[in-house]
Length: 175
Image 1 (cartoon, rainbow, N blue to C red):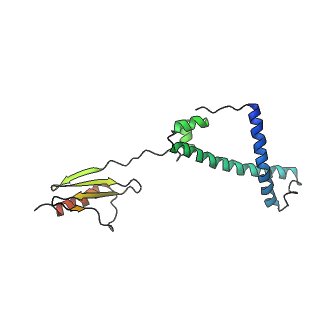
Image 2 (cartoon, helix red, strand yellow; image 1 turned 120 degrees about the vertical axis):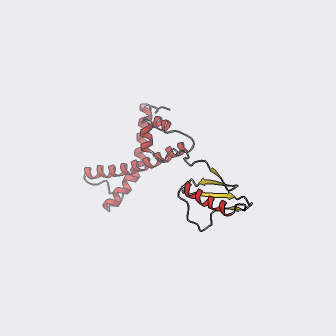
Image 3 (spheres, rainbow, N blue to C red; image 1 turned 90 degrees about the vertical axis):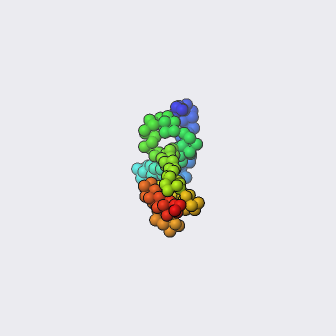
């Protein structure tokens, strides 16, 4: 998708609409800053009035950036890539990734569950994608099923989960 060009008439209409929307905001912001009633706030030094308008444009700029970030995130949540976001904004894929780092969901890097067979039993090791902690479920040779105790400290590695699962399988192995 390329960035569309707008016609001079569209640009003029956009500028008029933005100025119409900006005027009440500029008036309110300047009135609060000066303590003047809104109907008198324009009766001031022209530079001060122009600076008040500039402050209002800064408020609008901040809001446009926020809304742009939301739009990029929405597009990303529907499957748009950084390449597409960049093309829509007229920047590179890398520029889009830098501008909206959280717009496109990262592919899951959670490894597939691992099966461990020991002492004629079997355990499955899996990683919680939200926390990165590892856990296990086991079916021992004697038929018992086991998981970590509810108050057990979380396993921070696959090897740690494997050690606990292996200890469970050994404890409930057939004699």
